[in-house]
Length: 263
Image (tube, rainbow, N blue to C red; front, top):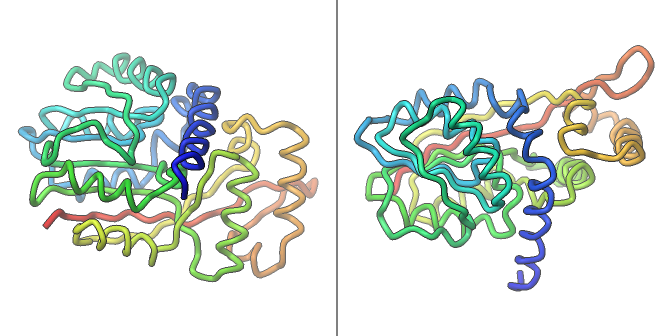
């Protein structure tokens, strides 16, 4: 990917999250969930540690981590989003955080600076995920952990295409939900040993999911028709359900939690 293409994609991400910042702060699906609980449970935290939360979004992961570490740096590519997260964390009385605008693919931090790094429900927006994971490895101390949660595309190519098409049509700043095999490769190339790998599913309420993204009424209708017009086996895989009036109600997609340790 050329530098110009990459920067253009990042500009789309910044525009999207500048417009939707408050929606993500208020999002129930982002502020809670078994995945966030599991991230805390397996993180091997210590109140002497220095942590980094990458692409914080609404700040929910940083809020969960903050009580377990000595200090956390909260970062995001989009200044408006970061300011919304700062206000949210301050309202929650988080006092051991600092805030830094940061590109996940070029982190503005020194080598071996952090004991822990987290990134939750964000890398599918990154133009070059492999580069971002290598940056995480660079700033982690030896033995440090990277705790990653993100959407995962199925290994089946047709399901992969459908998954990413739906995401892109809902949010044009979406880059790609990678397969589990791709994620394993990113970690291996960065020198991170995967010690834990947990798959889970998230169920989206279609109306809420599209409202958060500020999808237009016509866009919402067209995407609904695309999903409901897909092959039966695709709808079964993504657990598509409809309401009594025939409109799309819910569907589910795959996510992964990876715990990687720097060698």
